[in-house]
Image (cartoon, rainbow, N blue to C red; front, side, top):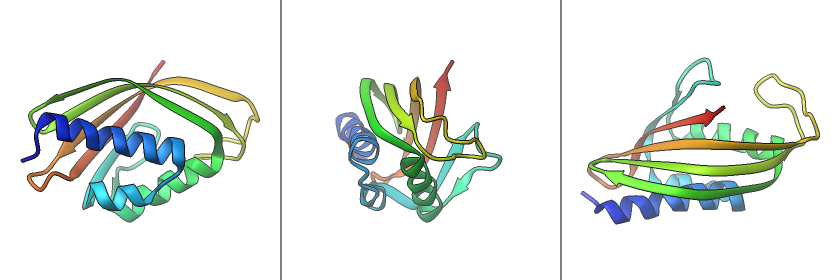
Length: 129
């Protein structure tokens, strides 16, 4: 199993490359093909890397000028948690809500569970109100 530091590097890479650069290919490189994604804003869990990438593609289409700053990363056992600061402009509809054309500021929390092969097998994201 990967070290705690290696897991933190993978989690950081996912967050930085996907949100700040729009590089969805990093999901294929770092996540299990059978990943399960939990998000309280979704009616059901996402299952599989293609579903996760589809969700992220829609998110990146809806929010522009994204800046995600990783504030803290912690690793213990097979889990990594991340506290971040997120800003973007809502330019297109997302999850049934119309585009506001306004800046969004939030403090998301991400959790990553790693499998024995060193890839992410489960992921949670929540917003801090």
